[in-house]
Image 1 (cartoon, rainbow, N blue to C red):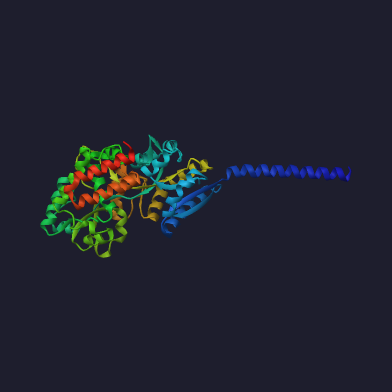
Image 2 (image 1 turned 45 degrees about the vertical axis):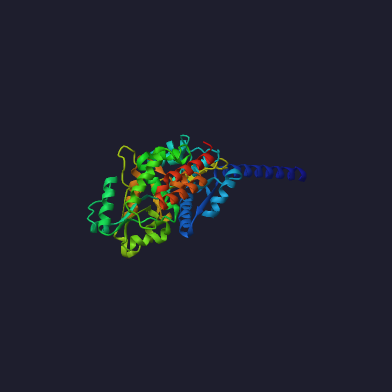
Length: 420
């Protein structure tokens, strides 16, 4: 064999080996994917718990590398639309309800209906399924939420002779009368923060008219001059007329209103469980929490429980591994881990109950409700309408006699925004 022939054979063998190696690398690369995840977070503790979940996932699936990008929550809100319409990550976190539906109806979120059926989510996330759905299909994988309800001082209830937490509206009104007779203002409210008033509107509407009606109203499909909407306000007006709220409530934001509870000047406050971390040690043992009272027993009981969720963008490149990640995260154990790290409640009804007593009550309320989970007023409707609606609530609280004028103005705004 000539030297030239030998060199040819060696070169051919090397080329063959290179091709085989490349083919093997391509095959392995197809299996060993990179999962791009964008996460909105507030503070180091939230970032840390997400990173811990990513590390757990990689241990369980070593062939999948997670490339996580952590973005401050406010910047995230601005950047999300750009990601979804151009070069999208494989997973994003966001919110259920109208905020999810906004992107789902534009074809920017992947349909996860099959994942809900295959992974048992219809059972584990029954209470949040409606909030995770658009046009009968699911586009979200819930992670955590927090409960809304009535915080109250147990010692003040005892002082006023209230023997049990009010479960019905009549019992609630009776409790208010007893508190006033004992020289205690029944309810603290931070009306300067308009969103705290929106909590009152939400619950009165959910209890009087139910979540199906509430969501139609949030979607701009019901006139604000509808008798059912007016009934919400007239029920609210009864509390105002009876002086059940602190005086000059529009002067106080949340930070300024909470001391009414802490100092024993007011007995109750409608608020989300996220405030529990700020309770002073001196009163923490006296604080408890109950479900907003039932007004009409024939209306299925719904709750406000703003849900955080995960989504696969329609333009994601690695949807197979994204689905594997969602299946991993949507378990009782990971749900509990995220809830603890994020200061919330697990949206998974099979997760262990929280150790904190108030969080445990909130978890029980949200995981067992069958009337639906609303996302809160300014998450269930478009921002412009929500802003105008909350401004109208402040005008109503300032002067309840102008209710009809407020509703007429809101109706004109609804027609302008929704063209209906």
